[in-house]
Amino acid sequence: MVFSQNVPRRQSYLIRHNFSQFFPPQVIQALRLCRFSDGEFLCREGEPTLYLHFLVDGRCKVARSLHNGKEALICFYQNFAILGELELICGPAPGGSFPSINTVQATSPVWCLSLPIATAQSLLLNDPLSLRFLCSYLCQKLMSSNRNLSISLNYPVDQRLASYIFCSCQDQQVPFQANYTHLAEYLGCSHRQLLRVLRRFREEGVLKKEGHAYYIIDMDALKKLAGDIYSP
Image 1: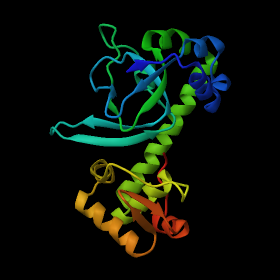
Image 2 (image 1 turned 60 degrees about the horizontal axis):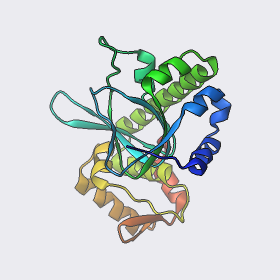
Image 3 (image 1 turned 180 degrees about the horizontal axis):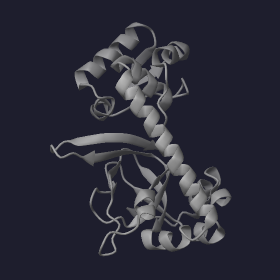
């Protein structure tokens, strides 16, 4: 995690994500711009949460460890998300720390606007405008989680993959790229099964492959394959 003094970049993120609409000036002034490298951890499960991060650019994966020793991939965050809001609202554990509920790792270079968790506690939890935004965000996250779980439980792999690609890449000129090991884990299938479905999508003229990236050829066919669409 490296803090940046790039004022134009910070300002562009504040404007792009409408921070002034949801937070008072004292909160915006306290936000610090920081960067995480690809593969760097923003927080680790069970360790103290040091910052409330507003993800404003980049992509992260969220995972949680299971009792059987495996790691469950929960979701991906992209372009905008709040990290640490549950820890903030639930409050500190005995001893005063805010243990992280999940592990969040950057899967691309990531930019955040961040507040130390103690500062967030004093500024956000005592401001009605900020609290309303946090509650609204948590409601949207809950609805997305319920929708995505329903899709994962009730659709076969080809439909889940089509839904994920459609959700992730709405522009046919932009390639769809992913860590396919992580994606297979997220979709609940094997790596081999995932590649087999991708190959079938190519054979059916839905996707084309260039290098390691896929491009959508037939957006209508992809949407028809997907059925219900994952929420980002």
